[in-house]
Image 1 (cartoon, each protein chain N blue to C red):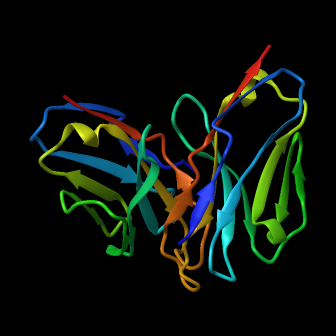
Image 2 (image 1 turned 90 degrees about the vertical axis):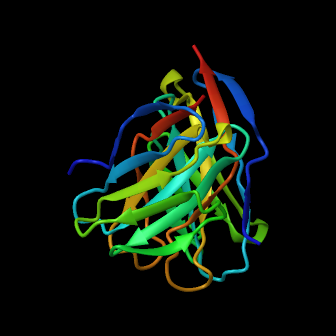
Length: 114
Length: 118
C-alpha cells in the first residue's frame, strides 16, 4: 500500500497570504489528523477529521481550518499567514478511527512565511 | 492534564554502544496507548511501536526493546549496539482518548535527538 502523501512538500509564502495543504491518507484509512511541528513548541495537534467531520480540534486560532472529502483526502487551510506559522505540517492517517489506533504519518509540508 | 516528558534533549553515543531513551507520561485515563516514533532528517515520522496500558510485557524487535512500567509511568526505549543509521529524533507519544473513544490526537514529548558517531 502506498503511504500517506502530502503536497506540496515545500512552500514559501509572505505574511498575510493564505495557504492550502493537501493530504492523501493510506488507502482505506478514514481518519486524518494534522499536526504542526516547530522548534519551539514541538509537535502540536491541530485537528482530526473522520468521515468528513471534524471530530477534534487543538488549541489553534480560527485562521487554521480544514476539511475532509468523501474519499478521505484532507486539506488544511491557513489564512492571513503570520511569521510564526512557519513550520513543518504533518498529517497522519489511521484506519477505522475507533479506539486509539496507530497513526501513520506523511513526509510533511515545510511552510516558510516571509 | 495529559503530558509526556522526554527529559533527554540530546544524546550522543559512539557506534555499537547501547542507549536508552527515557519517556515519562501523565494521564488520568485507565486505558491508554503509548507510542514511539522516529523522525529522520527527511522529516517523516516513522512508527516504531504501540503499547496499551494493560500490556506491561517488555517487547524486543531486533536491536530495539521497550520497557513499560506502569508503576513509574515510564515507557523507555533501548537501542542495542547502536548504528549510525539510528541517528534521528525519537518521540514518545500518548493517546488522548478522554477515557473512551478516539479523539485522533496524540500528545507528544519534546523528542530526544540521538546522534550515533562512527
